[in-house]
Length: 118
Length: 115
View 1 (cartoon, each protein chain N blue to C red):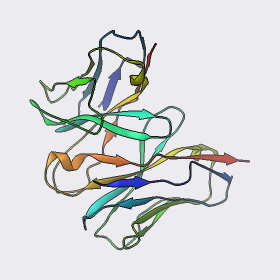
View 2: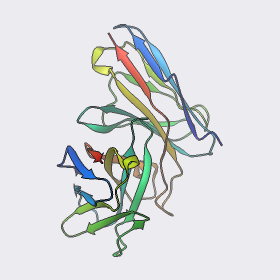
View 3: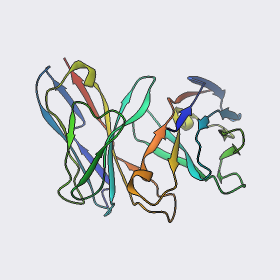
């Protein structure tokens, strides 16, 4: 079974600075998807960024980028120019790539709470 | 599109009561699922469905029932609520298939307290 580990329960960053959230995972499969979700105090789960394991290039979405190290099974999220609105819980998630409905299941890490200070 | 909707937003139950959490989506997604979120444990899969009439268990199915009579709706039933079921419940949906990492869309969540 796949597992996802987020070893930082809480992180803090000053506004305009850069912060990196860590995520490691365990899988025996060679192809899969990885995601970062943001959960603000409203509880809504918002997709921040996704990475296909077969792609060597790291995904980027505006101020958000990932450092995907497939051999190390590491998938960290970098937030640049942090803003107050980035304060939230961040979850790393894993999904298999198999053409069956079961492949749609997401396995989540336990989350990292990010505080943004002035 | 309304996306994924969940009702109610909040609910308090007494131990032993039953209730149904409603989930609906208007995106014609094949896949629907229920997660529970507990402090320090992330989101854990309860049940999921890959289409009308097809359901299966996830990681933590005990104490919950589901059915999928239509593509749009995927209700979660608590037959006899227990304090251990106090949690925030999320419904999610997506397309399935190999062609692409289909995004899962989440509902706003239901906060359930069992006393």
